[in-house]
Each structure stands twice: as C-alpha cells, then as structure tokens.
Length: 120
Length: 120
Image (cartoon, rainbow over all chains, first blue to last red; front, side):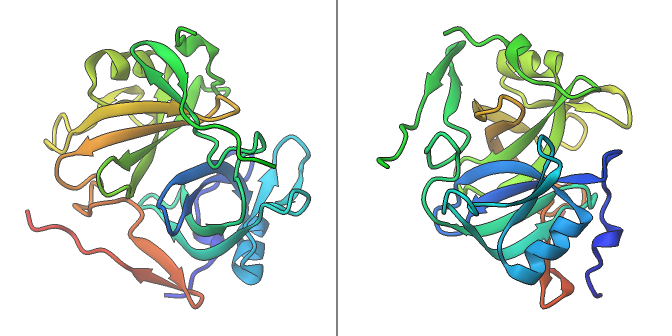
C-alpha cells in the first residue's frame, strides 16, 4: 500500500509527534512535531523537517546549527498518530549541545543530569 | 533538586507524551500520554501508568493483558514537555501483539510491515 501522509492522524493543530532515534546507538534523541507537509518534505529530502510550534514555520533540523538529522527510515505506530524517525545524527541533537534532549533522569526523587554538553 | 511533576509542561488537556523504550534492546516500544497524577503513580509504583484519552482513566500498562512495563528510569527532555520511560517490557507492548507499536515502515513510498505478531 502506498504511503499517504493524509492517512496519519493529526491533532487539532494539524500536528503529529515524531520521535528521533539514532539508528546506530538506538538512543532516543528528541521528540518534536510534524505537519503533513513536513512529513512529505522529510521523506522527499531525507532531511528531518519538523514544524516549529513557536515559530510556526518549517524547521529543518540542523539548518542553522549544522547538527543535521538524515532520515534513514520513517515508521508509524499502530494508531497512526505517532512517528518514529531513525536518523543519522550529526553532532548533538539537543540545543544545549547534549547528545540527546533527555539528559535529565529522576533518581530517588531528585533530578540528575546524566549527560554533559559536548565540546564545541 | 527534588523532582516535582508540577514543574513539567503539560498540554491544554493536562497531558504530556511519554515514550517507552526497552531498557535492554533499546527498541522504542510505544508512545502514550500521562497526566500529572499518572507520572506520580508511575514513579511510586514502578508500574508504567498512562492516562487513557479514550477512556479518560488511568491505564496501568498490562493490567488486563499481562504485558506490563516496569519502570527502570524516567527521564525528561530539555523543554520539560516530553518524557522517556526506560522499561522492562513483559511480552509485546502493542495491542496487536507485536513487540513495538512502530511496526510499519515507509519504504520506497509504500507501507511495509516489518514486525509480525508474537505467538500467543
């Protein structure tokens, strides 16, 4: 069956969450949102392209920082309301220069920073 | 710093997305939603407890199917608006009996089923 982004289930804002996972290390890098058009752009360009809710604009990951995500494979879940992008990540995925945005763990009731920023 | 679920950023429905990742295989298993109270219950019980948007009720993963998720570690992202739960998954995570909900890949413009249901 041909894949049609139209068949995904978008929320009231027309967006769907997309989880980015490093295809090599399998680390979960980040979660951001895609519009129907950003799904199409991601598949066509192989550059992971989110929709920035704060800027209300396409967000080609790494376009300004150089920390790009090249799409290896896009997957969808059973409910068709969440995406998983397997990516080749250049540099850190997080704007704080950490490898992943999920650098804070809850350990014994307290927040623990489990990743340090990479050297610039 | 003590972790207070109050400091997370919930959406207009009072929910936050939570990604479940298998702590051993690092597979991304599913994404579902948590309320503030389900975050607390998950941490207190170590049983991953989502908020079912369709049933508007707590959803202790695996309570009826037996396919439980035991929390190993809860992490939060830089924006405090997404959670990552590292879990020990018993049986398949997906209600279709597949290991992960993300069993459909987009390959050459078509949908490909990349995981079969596990034997019951």
